[in-house]
Image (tube, rainbow, N blue to C red; front, top):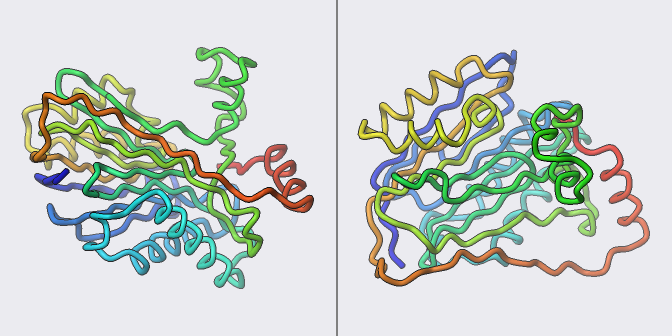
Length: 285
C-alpha cells in the first residue's frame, strides 16, 4: 500500500503549566515525512521535559525517514527498547524521569501505530467521525475493563491521572514495557490522523474533534481552530494533524486493522515485584 500524505500541521502550547513537558519529532514535518513521535513527560516525576525530549531524539536517531516503508511490530519494540536505553544513559539527570509515547509510521502495509501511556492517536473520517483511537494505559481503563466502575464514573475518577505504562529509567530489560502496536489498513483519501497529548483531548470531545478536523477549511485553519480551543488547557497541549491525500489501495476490499500481541520472556521474581509496585502506585501524571 502506498500512502500519500497531503499535508501535516502541528502545534505545541504550554496551557496552564509553567513549563513545557511535551515534545514532538520531527519539528519540521512535510508531506514526505514518514514517521511522527509525540511524548508527554510524566508530571508526577522530576524532569519529564528531559525524558520526553530524550525519547523523541532516540526515535529520530535510530529511524531514518526512508526506513519506514518496511517497518514492522518487532522494529517498534526494538526502537522502544533503544529509547529505554537512552533514558538510562542519562539517569544522572534524574533517575525517576518518565514519559508517555505516541508513534506513527507510514509503511507499505498501512499506518503503523504504537503508544505507551495516555498520549493518543486518532483516525478521523469525514461523515463517520472517529473511526479509530488508541486506548489509554491507565488505572481507570483497567477498572473499566474489570467492571469495577461504569463508563459514567470514569470521566471524573479521582485516579484519572494515573497511567500504568510509560517509558522510564531502568537498566532491567524485564521491566521494559511493550507498547500497544496497531497496523491501520483501512485508510481512505482525506482521512485525518492525529497524535496528541492529554491536554488536547481533555478540551474537546470526539464529536467536536471530528467536526473541526473534517471541515471544508484548509488543514492549517482546522489546526489553528483546535489549537485555540486547547490554548488554556489544564496541561501542555501538543498535536500532529496528518491529512491523507490518497492511497493506491482498492477501496472495494474491506481491510481489517491488526493489533499485535508481543510475547515477552518469563519474568523474574524481581521484575514481578516491580510490576506489583507499579500497579499499586501507578505513574501519576
